[in-house]
Image 1 (cartoon, each protein chain N blue to C red):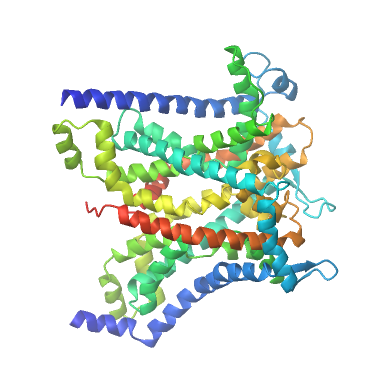
Image 2 (image 1 turned 45 degrees about the vertical axis):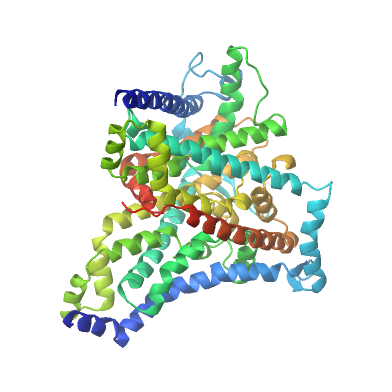
Length: 292
Length: 315
């Protein structure tokens, strides 16, 4: 017993030190960026240690006004967005995408778990198969399809792509609905409630906290994801995509501190959301580790 | 008896069927169009070529032959980088799916055991997953090339700027970045699975004098193996899609010698953001079809093998 405790202490010590170094590194990275973002361009180039000399100037309000990106995809027409425009695009894109990405698997999971048709039995197996089977290189095809449907680079097109039900959250919702008693619904049906009313008014509210967690996970991931927006919805850049455009369009290195300020500004909303809902977010993600 | 009658009355009515159809219609249609449809269209696209004069894609046997032949031609050609991209993709997969997963398992065990500071470490390990990759990539590039180079220089250990120097250094730096910030979700999943292992099991084992590594290998690993195996199987396709976040560091301008297959496909389709060359779409689709044809049987084979070795555990 004593030996086991000693071995456990050694294990904890080694892993603990590695994790402590990792944590210092990560916090250091963010603190350094925050400090550098308050330096002038010259100070940034002269000195790697932002705390040694020079002054700190909180330029975030200024950056909000001055940060502008050209989002013209044809290379000729100049379509500029400032940070407020980018944030507005981000909110619309992330909110809309998160809603459809949450609702679609939610409603399909509900009917699949509660309406015992043959198709319902097929759905969970189908989703598992889709998740398992890798599909590679269909981006070109999807762009071509969106173009031919004339919804490429439109809000509707961007949402249509996100409205799939074959995500792992279908399985999470399916499991949740299966564990719910159907008796509430039966009582409501006896009282004359419609199927829609039972679904939206009784059954779905019973798993509201889970739905909210999934929604937040989707919201954060769409806020962060710039490659999908770049691929299918490039002319209304989100804040993350705006950062990419800013970096791409700035050929000189004269805007390094502005770029780092932009990085901080784009990250702050999701860090705040994360800190507020960290347990909900992490708890929901770790739920997937129950049984594989 | 009464219950099943009520249930039958509810789900057996035409109203129930109509409701069911209404609910699943749109999501199913979405999958038919953008899931199955996009993949089928990808197959069709790989048989076509782009007509510059009309701006349309046209079918031709020659185009199909060219698109698929192109892949094998480039694979065997010494002037093409395709072989190197395969190798890079293998390294990317090895380090992100294998090495990072191994670290994630060790960290998860520490967190599941609720050792000192585990709550903070759990939070910090996950934090990079919620920072936009473009922001984290841009920050990390500057932090490494500027701060870390100067910091290590203080101890007499000087080296070139990893992200701006030689391509081999760029590749190593990108791998390093992906390991460093790729733990989050894995650690959460594994620690979640480990914390559900009944404590009575580990308590009995510790009474028998089991060491932590033995507990990790002989108790935890078999019990969380289904979770590990699912992750592993789902990660196989990542061999062809992993971009190593090169796009965040370099946009479309990474040195060709460090490209991965995922980055290559992305750059060819998206370009630097102003759109890829439409004429490249057919042959990129052909590449995608070939990769899918390889990835699907490999995934199924690995899944079958994993299922065979997965212990039948209930707890």
